[in-house]
Each structure stands twice: as C-alpha cells, then as structure tokens.
Image 1 (tube, rainbow, N blue to C red):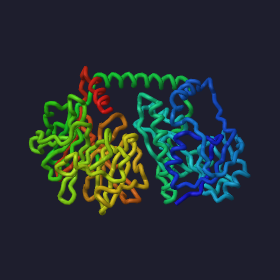
Image 2: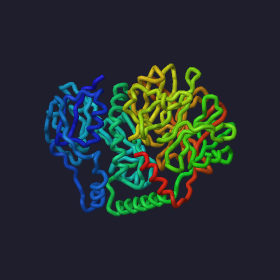
Image 3: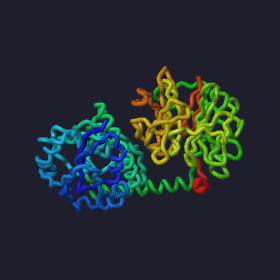
Image 4: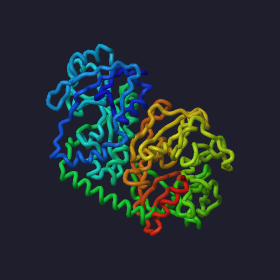
Length: 525
C-alpha cells in the first residue's frame, strides 16, 4: 500500500543517508509534495561550543551526511520561508493548508529544526528521525554522550512529532554498534543503519503498531569545550589501547562440549572447566563456530589454518574430539551450519569472502553446490536455516552490516527462490543481530541465539524468544544471555538433545599477533 506523503527539506537538499532511507522505503511511499524551507538557521554559540563545532567538522560531517539534491520525480515543489517563534519554526498557514487539502496523510521531516504542528498541520502525521535512544538519551549531539559514557550501543528512532518534545508515538527503533575509539566511524555506522528504519516505521504505521518505549531519558545539550576535551582524551586512550591489543594480543578460540546442558533464561556462570575441550590439532590456530551433525556423533567447525590464516571446515569425533576429516579448505570457510532434510544431511558454510551462499549435500563436495535461488547477488554472513510451518526461513547477516542487522529470507523450497522478509532487517541491534547458532526449540518455543558484539567480537550470546514468525511478520523478545565465568564468549551455541557445544576464547600475548592478524586479510584479497 502506498502512503500519500509530503517531504520537508532545507533548500531542496537532504543528507545522503536520508536519500538512502527514502529509496529503501520507496515501495510504501507516494511523495506528491516537496516543501523546501529556505531560511532554516540554527543559533550557534561559537565561544561556548567551539570545541564541539570543530569536532563536528571531522566526525558528524561524513559521507553519510553530505548534502545531495533531491530528485522531485514528478512531485510538486513548494518553496517557502518559515516563521520563527523563538527556537521553533512554523510553516505558514497557506502552505500548511495546501498539505491538508492535497490529501496528504504523512509528512516526512528531513529539514527545519523544531517545528510547530498545530493549526492546519494538526490533521497530518509528521515523521522525524532522532539519533539517540530516548529512554536514555534525548537532545543532541547524536552519539556524543553515548561515546563519552562508553555505552554499549547508540539508538535511532522514527517518531511522530508534536508541540511537546519527544511526546509523539515511536514507529521504529534500531541500535548501532559503537566504535568506542572513533566518533566518526560510530557516526557513519548509525547514519548508515538509519536508512532501514523509515521503511520499518512505515510498515508499523500502516499496521498501527507503534513501538512501546519510554521517552523519558535525560535531555542533553551541546557540550562545552571542557567536555569536548575530556571526550577527546578518552578517545585517544581507547585508540592507543586498541592498537596495542591488535599488535600484541590475539583471541585463542576453542570449543567446549557439555554432556548435560540446560538453558535457563539467564546464565552467566558457564565454565569451560566444567566441560570438555579438544586439543587443537597441529597446523591449526583455533577452533570455533561448532555445530553437531544430525545424529550428534560429529561436530563440524571452523579450524583456522596456522600457515595461511584461512578457515577450514573440519569434522571432529564427538567422543574423543579428534579430527575425523577436513571437508572444505583452500579459501576462507566458517560457520558450517548443519541440518538434515528428507534423511539427507546438508551444510551451509559461510563463504561471504568469495561467493554467494550455497548448500552442500553429504558427502559435501564443492563440485556439487546447490545454489540458493534469489540470493545470487548476496554475500551472507552466518546463514542459519529454519523450517517452520512448511516454510524455509534463512536468518543471516549481509557483509556490509552484519554486526548490526539481521536479515530474514523465506522460501517454500529448500533451494529457493528465497524472498526478502517485508520487515528486513528484522533486527537492528549489535547486542543480538548476528546469528550465534541454530534456532533451538526450548519448552516448545523457538529461541534464537544472537551474538553480543557491542564491545568487541564474540563475547557472549543474547537469547531471544521468537514470538511471531511468518512470511509477513517477525517479532522476538530478549529473555536472557549466555557467558562464561572463566573465559570470553560464546559466540556460537548448538544443542543436540541434552548435549551442547559452544565456543570461547582467551586473550593471549604474542609478538606475532599483529602479523597473524594482517596475513589473512592480505590472502583474502
């Protein structure tokens, strides 16, 4: 269904991420009117906030916020000067009446500052983006205080605006990963992820399903010069610590099995010592991404080749955890999701570095790939298949956004064609988006394991109960998390009957850590 809409811009231009948001949501929008305001001006105190404005030039001014001209595509352009009431702007009544008389139901605000919404505008809904989770961070600047306070992620919402700040309905919310050493990289990321939220907001708006969230967080203001100085000092320290870690420390991954494993809603007392870990075979640096075979007698996992830094898929004997065979090698392979269908076993290896996704049927020969129709142009990360109500659902990340966004595709056939879910990405949140193992049925309910990558890669799993799953709907609810008391991780979990296999890592000092970190990057090119 198309929504008859108008667009508010400043000087008929918008940011690159805003244009991307409109493009991504185009199937739901019929933009008939473009309102171009020519006199939006934000008051600036260059003495009090000099540090912030200098910082802004090198961080919030980036490829996502660069201004681009808007292509009207047949929409009517109306230029106007707004009226000012202190810090608030008002659209002249004749322009506001034109909106109402044109049958416009929704206005998307990508220009102007604080906007009065009474008078003729009271009959239409006005969408606006806010970068910050309003339950904690209101006001501005985007992402600054989350970085300063070292929060785990930064939020973005699409909200209906009113004459009262942050009082309108929230129609979409997402969270983005923070690069705690770089404000610019953090900003580029949350602006890039913002492009997905307008479409999600429109779908919820059409179904009258606002997001339940409290908008009562602290209302922040632009930081003073001393606050900016403290901010820069913290970033410099974090950047130095990151460089030192990359040069001299590396994650030593391994897997651990448990013979009797229960999954309560929250469990942070997992212990590597309570399970059984294999001795990593000669020639490999680590084991990770473990999955049971269909009968539970084998464990398939990624084994990192110590010589070239590329992942190989190997099979371990479940009883003594010794290597039975090497299934895939020569390029980078990981996350060997395994499943059975019609008494035949299949693997979906992650091959995002060099190929579109495919299935391998036992005996898993690469010369006998089964391509997944509909996904030929995709590079998917951690692909995980679930058959539910006779529909095949593929949960996965996409290469460019896998830390933050979970995508869902569905098909009536094992090999496709797969179609994108209308709510894609179904999750925008670095604490749970990336798949962390097979979808498990626990007490009759589906539970999804998602990696928590907020403060690094692979340090814990968030457990979410899947509340709704169909070709047209998806909803999940966080119910707990998994972590180790004596190691970091897991980032992959698999359960077979009462047994479980998980991976974990320990940070180890090594003078060759930097070299080993760089080598696979060069070899993958």
